[in-house]
Image (cartoon, rainbow, N blue to C red; front, side, top):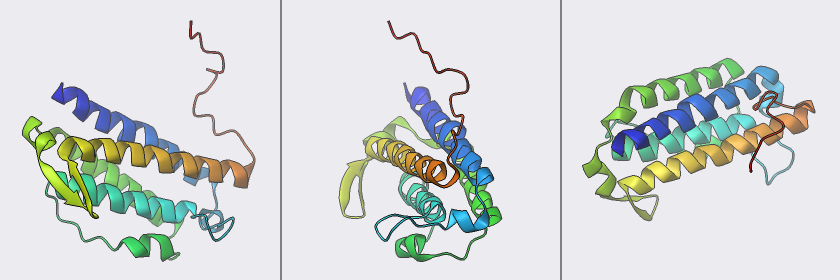
Length: 164
């Protein structure tokens, strides 16, 4: 069961969400990465910085004890990163997750943590990080579709699925 969970971390974040975000970045210009439709929305760049900070704080720092100093507010205010910088941040995160997700143990899943004022378990951390990553990946995809007015091709030709 534990290896299934470790595989889900790898699959959902490293093989699904990060490649989708990288695809969006490939379609966007440096200027479009920082496009903000209104004051209540985030930019693609800020969402990437936020995903990096959240994943490193929750999963890598708290659960796997890999040092990280987070400045959460900077994730939403910064506009100083190039598209290339953001790609390097995502690739570094993917590398760190891939290199360490196998270290999650059954004991870790039952441990209790307090993160950002939230009481959770190790399992709660894993669930939070996967769903949080997916949530913001969807926002990045939507922003990219709004900016570029094109299908992102995440599902190829699988438009007709047999769900009987």
